[in-house]
Length: 269
Image (cartoon, rainbow, N blue to C red; front, side):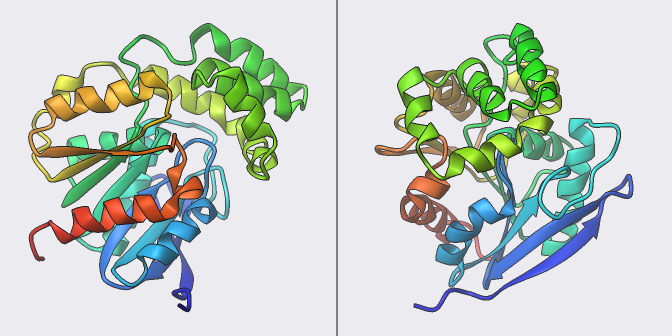
């Protein structure tokens, strides 16, 4: 099967920052907000799989890929970026947020709920600060230019990856790419820690929602999604067997199947 053709576009956010978007496929739009150590290109395999059914708008969040940046960072600025891409995609767009990108989409949804929602393990700090005291040694490694060490510290202390999982990850071709993205992780961790732990504020988010978790993901991340499942009025939860936090890379067919099944069950637009 021939892969769908992709095209690139830019939108301008409220503060003037240019946000890059990779658009792939045909059918109902799906806007994707990647996580802290990801960019639009990481979602391309999944976008190709979804291409016959959905048009994926994969965002390069500010500060990475082909997007611009701003001297001041706030999660609301990134929520404004989401709004600008949704304006491009259209009012019937599904909105997918992965990891930190899930927090960005939730911040947007509080003010303007999407037509439908997919959340893949958003790291809401229900157990207290996620960065906290671990931020200082992480930032020291970044300042020293030791991005390998920064990634190791972030995976260990922020995401709570076990040591064996970190070592397995270190042997993959994704390690160097993720390490190169660590300089923006600290500011996102601060935004995450200030996001708040009150899940009841999402109880009014009465739109069809798919919560995705990986069977092997860190327990604290899957626990957040399971608690959201109890709060959101129209939510369903799917667990991807044998996968963890990055199934869009490690098992994209399974994630594509979950997304298309969810999309097929939505009311016609």
